[in-house]
Length: 240
Image 1 (tube, rainbow, N blue to C red):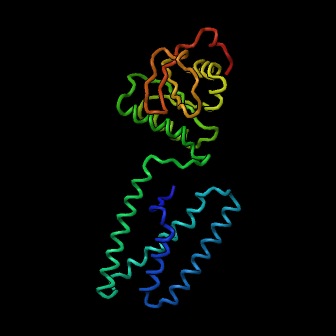
Image 2 (image 1 turned 90 degrees about the vertical axis):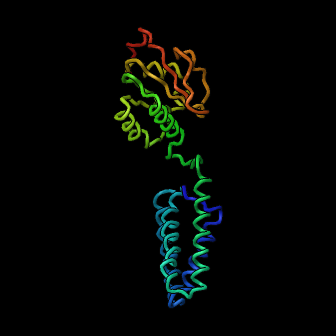
């Protein structure tokens, strides 16, 4: 989501705004404009939250313009007296170092919003990394577990399919966990082999070895590839 800037980014934004007001040619007018702009952003953000939902990423509409406004003091630095100019350049350098360190702290962290599909997205990322290293020699079908609502699955799956000669299918992870045999039989009945299940153990940890013809390929601590056994002849006539 938003870079937290060491957990103190709101105070840094207001510090930047204060600096901008202080070095403005007319500090009083700059202060009034700033207050009006903040009130406007709060009103717009509140209205959109009420009209849509209360998920925190709606606050981007408030934070990004405010963060941009807070950096405009940089344009006034060249016209400041030399001592103030040197202090402000040092402040900007320190702020840049802090921002860089905070971006590094975000690596690998997930924002658990229901419509982000973080588990399905993680599985697709691991599949992409695997196919970059070891692409399949022939067209292969992949069944990827996903959350009940995972908007990124379709465009991401199409991109992988076009690039790596794979056929990407998806299944609700909860449904597969409830009845793996029925879910996999339905999938194999309509998909020619070879076919793999991309399983994320954060959904559940069923014994999938009975459905696989070899040891799973471990992609990371959560995601594994299971080569599915060919479906029995009795299952090929099942309705889909």
